[in-house]
Image (cartoon, rainbow, N blue to C red; front, top):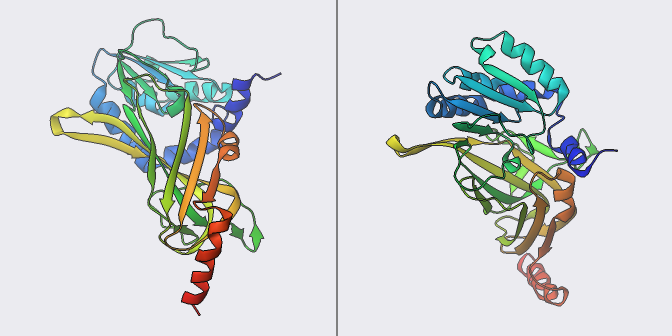
Length: 291
């Protein structure tokens, strides 16, 4: 029988099939940002640890400078494929692909740089080697999302390219930051947030967009950062709300670090910020205004 962590991993990505990783390799924003950040942080002679190595591409970037890279991956299919791919690439011999759980693995020697694309798995604290990403900023935004597919209504989790404008997506309010993770400090295992949005457009609030900005590396000599914006994750609400401009909507949710998407969905609450008795007057005013 699977334990809780193994069950959660089936949702979150430790068992993402190999063919999905093609999309990650094709994501130019991701690839360019990580290659630049790793090139900036990793120096000759360094030891590097990557947690959640996938196809091994980030370990490959590190191996172009590092003396040794430990690449930890839990999915046995990906362990096999990463070893095969790395053997085809320059300096791939510097990378040791290890079949282990990133939650528990400790390298056999001190390392200079830690690369971890699995944001919530990285729950460190205290003095660290160089950690990548160095920080993560997370925000949430209320949406009206079109879930009709050739006439078939299917409210489903969507991952959207941040560079594409989707005609079926209407932003009902500005994003609100709900968490900033600084990996130089201990990270709480429970992420919980409650806040309010002032609606800017009439519509139907039926989804929340989760925005994740990774600060991969801070380039102090230029006073700049190397960032990577994850694909937007859009989760449908269990119950939609009809809203008009000026409405205030209360939103709350929580999830355990490394938890599943379904557990986050189940925790989401979105309500108009006035009680049932107070809704009568605003509705009447709207009727008069548009008569």
